[in-house]
Length: 219
Image 1 (spheres, rainbow, N blue to C red):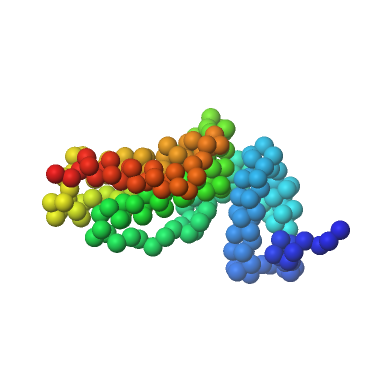
Image 2: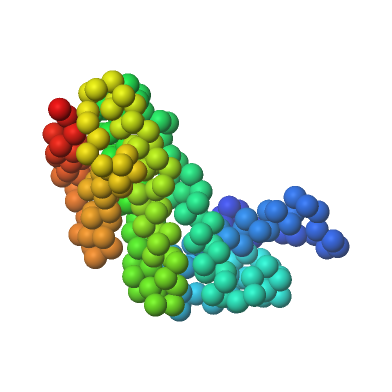
């Protein structure tokens, strides 16, 4: 049987007290491998033994970091969804002077994140374990739309309201939440049930949402 590629094998660790860099690397490895296994196998299908084996460490080392599998589960997903580079890197901010173009770019980024296979798996896990991990559902919703992205839309609306290009019919925060909901929240929910739009349909959805949104705000 062929050996696994070097990138897939756990990093060998020397004996003795680990350095700060080794401890940080182990912490990252634990989270990365635990995240992968939870996404692939779900909560019930992932054991602490399997995570320890994937990392190349011991269960005692895992329990020194997390008091239980529940704690690891919630911590790992909170860590992942707070990262700007997971499940894919965030794009550069759009040109805020171009209202329609910026809304389109923000909507595309929100939808792309919501439909990423990793985020779809998170949504399914959140739905399946809502009673046990209610916080996961809230975090997955925030990760799909994203508070930073909503703040960007709110700032964009304030910027153009100040020029008279649009009239704010509610608070900027509420309008931003409604816009993100249109472009990403509903598709994310459908994707969790296996209904994923093709790229052309996704683009048409963003264009329609931008037209509808601006029609309501322009004088």
